Every structure is written in structure tokens, then in C-alpha cells.
Image (cartoon, helix red, strand yellow):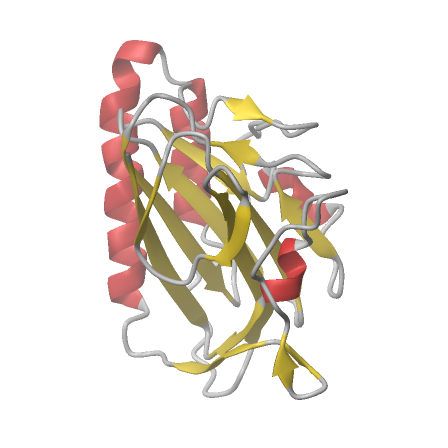
Length: 228
């Protein structure tokens, strides 16, 4: 799988087993905040490794580094899916679907990649797309398609990837009537935490630029990075 091939310190992707039970994500139609989490997406750019938040589509260069963090504020289900320039799809969060029944807790920071590692953009340039999805119920069809993709032989993966992207579009259409209630930066003492420079002795904590997100039943955002 081609992706940000160099990962500093630590960080790995793992797959999961197919699911055999669950709830239809469209079954609950609440009109209140039931999706709430903090989300941070940051990059270290240029030779000076300047630390900046990624909040919208942007351009990055080979050698730049990226990292994300998720912290649940309420019990909900967050997914981060990456679509690479060569059409390969991977689940970046959770690390494994089985994590939903294990290490998946409100109030804990989950870093992507795990630990101190950062993804580093390699020499394979092109469009990198990240799909952030969150719902009050598990997206079981999407999970099943990701499992099928992981188990598919190499020559069948392009078609499996297309099914995943089509399902993402379908899920977004299904929940299009639901609204985002709030999307605001986390503040300390009335000031947004500074992100001008990386500390020389260590990499910055991407949680310091996290945004609090709350929504009715469903939230989605797509980030496109032109990797040059």
C-alpha cells in the first residue's frame, strides 16, 4: 500500500475482521446533539517545520509531515478514511473496527498515527483525500466494504475502492438533512493556542489545535491535499 511511506518514530495501519451484527445508522432520528468530539489536523511544513492547522483543502510538499487527533466528547463513532493518489483506500481511524468494542473511550486522545509518529509525504505526488465521518450509530455497510477491500486480491481492489467511495457519498446523502451544531476552536484563557513554530526539542501536540465539533446524528468533512 502506497501512502505517506515514511512514518517517524512509530505508526502503523492494521485491518479488521468483518462484522456480523449492528444497527442501521439511519434508524435513530434525534433532533439533539448526539455526535460530539474534538478533531485536530496539523502539519509541519517547509525546512523550518512550521506547525500549521489543516482546516480546509490545501497544498503540501514532499517532506512535509501531518498528524491528526480524535477525542470523543460523547459516545459516537468517528471514522477517518484516506484515498491515495493511486486509488488505494485505507482506514486511518479507528486502527481496527474491533477497537469500537475495546479501547474506545470518551475523553481520551487518539493520535493518528499512534504515539509520537507523524506521517511524512513521500515522493509519490498527487491528490490525497481524507474523509472524516462521525455518526451516532455505526456505519456498518461502510465497515463491511472496508473489510472486503482488505481481504480482496490486488486486482480486485480498484473496484472495491470504488464501492467504498460510493458508500461514503451515499451515507452523506442519507444524512444530508442533519446539521452541524457547532465547530469551534478550543481556547485557553480566551486565546487560541499558538501554532507558529514547532518546539525545537520535540514535535508539537496536534491536540493543541483541535476543534470541538457537535452535530445531530451525523457529521462529515472532506480534506483534499494537493501533494506536490
